Length: 174
Image (tube, rainbow, N blue to C red; front, side, top):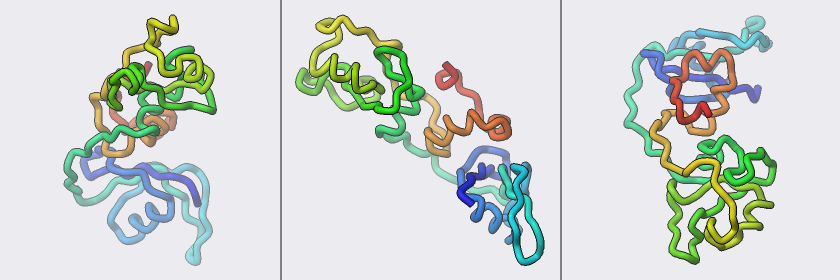
């Protein structure tokens, strides 16, 4: 039961991602309706239950607009888990300061990028023009702030059913 379920607000806005157990509880308590199932069945005392993939709350939940925090996970998600110097996806990704902290660079959305260890070691604490390396694209703060975490949003864009409910933002579709 480690599968995740997309939770929509009553106006079909993506609100959260929860575990299947929580989603089944919401449906059983009458707080949500199942919009899509994932095809697997869960054995219960009252028979088999199809596990949901997307549920919609019956009553609207008001939430303040979340703040997108700068973290390793959000930088990796923004950059698509691809090194911004060589363009290769890698398992050993790191965060690199484009302008190194030693040279006065800040830890900000506009100065940090996803980098593989090889490129990070090659660049070290030098400026880009000193290494001859180039960025694939300039780092920036994402304009879209999803209610669900940025990493869940990016992963959800790969799910064919969830894709229908997640808004499309061109900055994440490169």
